[in-house]
Image 1 (spheres, rainbow, N blue to C red):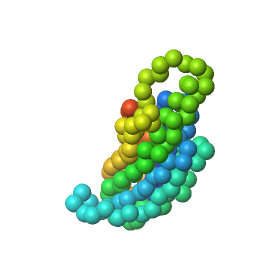
Image 2: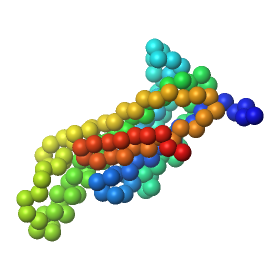
Image 3: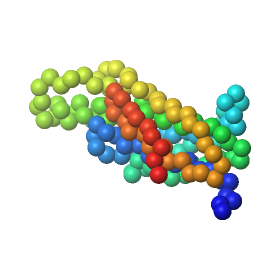
Length: 139
């Protein structure tokens, strides 16, 4: 019988448009004990070279809901700028406009809220592209 009541959260971000991990994205973690309670900020991290946040804080006892906030604006703007420069260097014709070509990214942030149970681990990956994203409970 598992008597560990520690609940933990991990995440990673994959840039599906580039086919690689999203590096340097700030992620913040908040928790609350019920649907009508105030959120308590617990801290944050930044994705590393493998797109993972390896140092998110452990959730306090009594947590029933968690919120992950991904600050995607800077990352998406940087990627769009790099893609535009690469297209120009390659002499490509008229490329379709992308976020960063004089406009703000379509998703400046992604916030995911989910329910947790004591003693469980929750891995919640973010699959990100300039005009879409997906999340799921991983393992």
